[in-house]
Image 1 (spheres, rainbow, N blue to C red):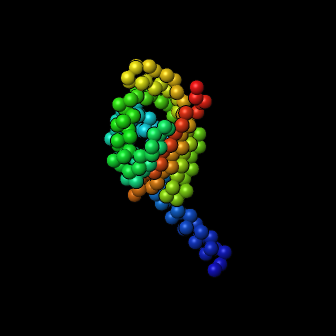
Image 2: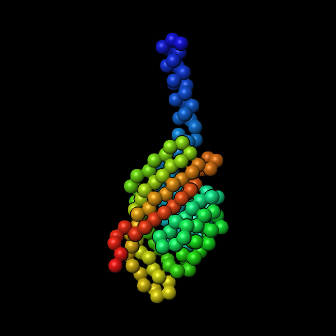
Image 3: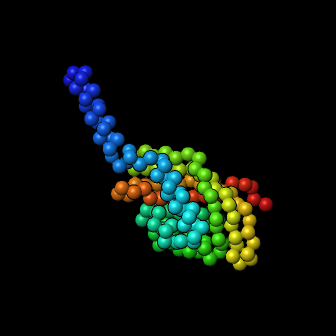
Length: 152
C-alpha cells in the first residue's frame, strides 16, 4: 500500500468515525440531559425523570435502596416526591464519552423542602451519572448522589 493510499484509507476511516452517532454526540449532550433532569426534579415530574433512564437503569439515592429497572425507578421518585420538594442547580464538573458508555460528574446546590414539616434547607450534593447509548439516544444507566458536606 502506498503512502497516498494509506492516507486516503485513514482519511476515509476518520470521516466515517466522525459521521457516526457516537462521535456526533458530545459531552454537551450529556449536559442537556442533566438540565432536563433538574427541570423534571423541580417539577416533580416522575415520568420525565423515568424517561431519562434506560430500561435497566439504576437510581441509587442516598439513604435508600437502589432502584433497578423502570418500575423501581418510578416508585423511588414517587416516594421521594411524597417526602420532599427539590430545586437544585447542577454544575457539570467533567464528562467523558467512550463508545456506547459515558459518564458525568456534577455538583448541585439548592433548596430542599420537607413536606411534612415545611422546613426548607440549603443542600449541596456530589453526583455521578453513567450513561448508556440506547439507539441514537443517551440514557441514564446509573445515577448516584450524596451530600457533599459532613452530617451533624
